[in-house]
Length: 555
Image 1: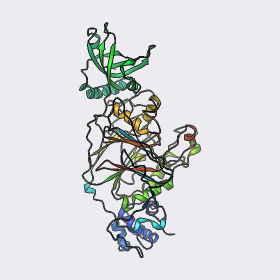
Image 2: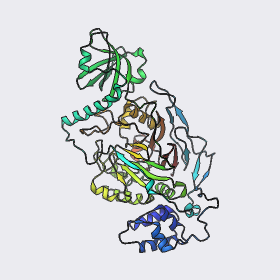
Image 3: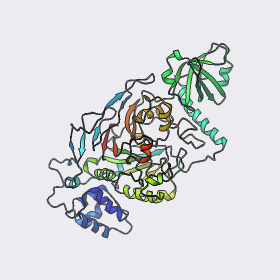
Image 4: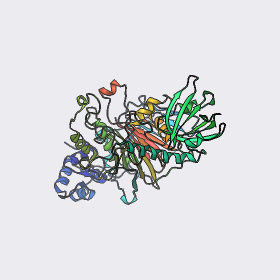
């Protein structure tokens, strides 16, 4: 039986324990008998080879082209594996924008793609709702006969920062938590001290009534009064002090964004008895509106994906194969990086009765299966992965990047496996990768217009505003005490990439591109019970030279 697509060739090589360069896959696909070519390459591969290269293929095929096929298009370009379909009735995308007291007009957000057919929605924060194209998945029109693809690894630059794997020092004692919150306060208060004339809590308590004062602290309590005002208690390293926010001050839109334990600055006037601060303004650490983003100095792309969930009954293997098949085509040649934001597998015991929805019940077997699917990705792709709450690591954040046993199972692409969260600098573009468990908390606590599952990027805006990926302690998000709070967003990223909520959404906040990349799992019975309708089979493709984005759907 002929091998009908690049992904099938990659799968066959993976079955024999090999991954392969993109060019090698293209050469095998262009052979007159792909099946025989694969068998010959496997038979003649060196005993110590882990990766099939183009040289291995040429050694057994002599560069034989497909019968009757011209490997190079007449115009010198590459064949287009998709066709335009601007009138698709099954696709829909729209653009929304909002203006809050803390935002400017550049804070546009793009709504999630609601397409129910394989579509591509182009744009960054402002996609064209009339532009949709469908993937052609007919094997007869497979574009694998196009020119072989070439990448120069010397042009690549990838660095990982804030990786705490192997650096955990917490023992769970009270003193460890004190160190974590002290570090949070010290680092975020530095961001705010340039905006307010800060005084410690104990110093404010000694100031005369009627004085102007400003305090920076972690939110210790927020409650409303009988009169409809709000009382916010802030805590710094010297003590606590209350601030009263009057309902007629026009700060209500900011008050309803406050989360417990986040760092906040309040400016105002002390009461006559100096016992309370009447607030005139609130300040979040926030991202500067003048943030300037980095950019690659060549045209190169990264695929941003998350929540593959191999092992689940609802893992979308066909969609994944269409995605990896497309990665082997000339159209995907610029994609040299794959950034995966957690939940590689479905895991075991994550939610009640999960075992009834598992195709693979052993966690190690799940990672073995994931590794086989990962082999379908072109072998010359640089891969960075962080864990998620379904993965076999501690649930408390920050999460270290897997133990040695699981790392050895997934060691098929020399992938970099780092902690959750971590910052990955890809050719000058800083990408903050965070799986996103705290998004559940933000969405539960804040008004729907500011954070919802249908627009997950807006919840991400709130984390950027707070400069912390999981500000609230003691709720849904478990936090591990460390000497350093690895969850602080100390350096402003250019791209903020999350997953977890299984919804697609992207937009720009103060020039930072926020992307939640959906999932590769169809709706499970558990998701139905909690009313989650996932956006499945999407692959956001980021241009690293322009920070523009194209979202492709493969399901």
